[in-house]
Structures are given as C-alpha cells and as structure tokens.
Length: 80
Image (cartoon, rainbow, N blue to C red; front, side, top):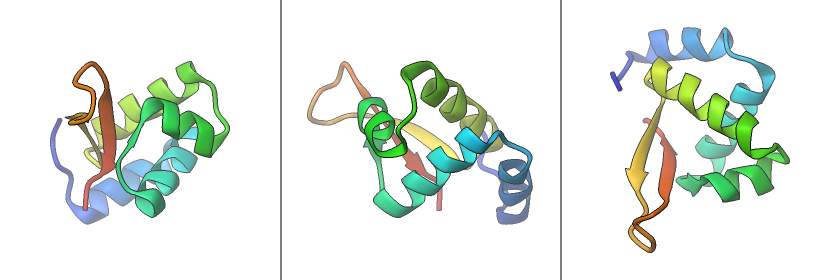
C-alpha cells in the first residue's frame, strides 16, 4: 500500500463506487473496524466490503492492520 497525498487520496475516493465511499465514510467516523463490523455498520455484504476495502487500500486512504484481540482477523483504518 502506498500512502497518497490528501488531494490524491480524495480524488481517488471520488472515483470509487458508492459502496466504497460509504465504507470510507464509516471508517472515518467510527475509527478502525473489522470486516464484520464494517458489514454491520454499512449494511453491506462481505464481498462488497472486501472489494471496497481493497480499492480504498489501492488509493492509499485505508490501511489494514492486525487485530490485537484476534490475530486471525484484520482491522481496517482510514489513513489520516
């Protein structure tokens, strides 16, 4: 993952699907979340959340980290 400049990141998010924009907004407002928590809060299915997170990671506006409570899972965070 590359970290985008603020302008590049915003421009990339603007080009994303509505689902990806929603996932990004949820992460900005709620902080770091697991995929399951993102599914619950955004009311999206697993594959939609996965695709959204992957495209947002490619934009450099979302990072994936190890969940310290359960290392089998990852948490996703909006990059500041």
